[in-house]
Image 1 (cartoon, rainbow, N blue to C red):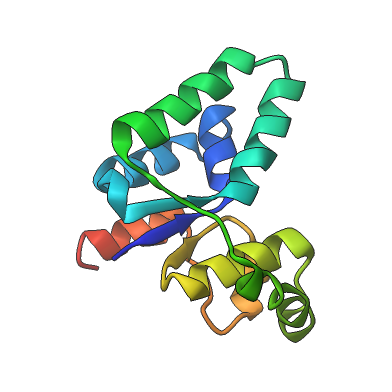
Image 2 (image 1 turned 180 degrees about the vertical axis):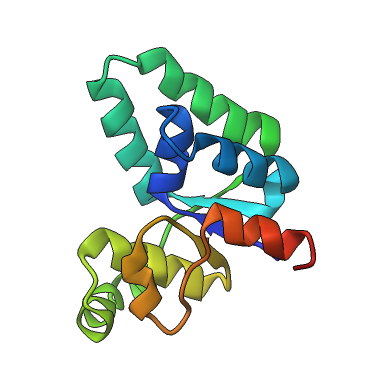
Length: 138
């Protein structure tokens, strides 16, 4: 199974928030090429981290993910971008969630997120804990 990891999952780990250990466990069980991150998420993470004065952390994050681990970086093409407004309307999602949803749908990835808004969608989402359980055969 291949996963699109939402912005909030990466930030949970990078900022060492409450569920960082669950995120660390999930990511540790997956090979880099089985994970994906959208360009939109990358920029959002960069904005948050650098606003917190963590410029070196952002550079390290990019190196660890893309250079060392081989995580896939997804950029939506124009023919996919035009589906975002309809996706927003169909599932009552904001722009960033609709972007993630279209990316997951386009690349047939399981969306891993803490955002319950994805539960309203046809594809749904998994939390890191649910993905870990699935990886364990549960």
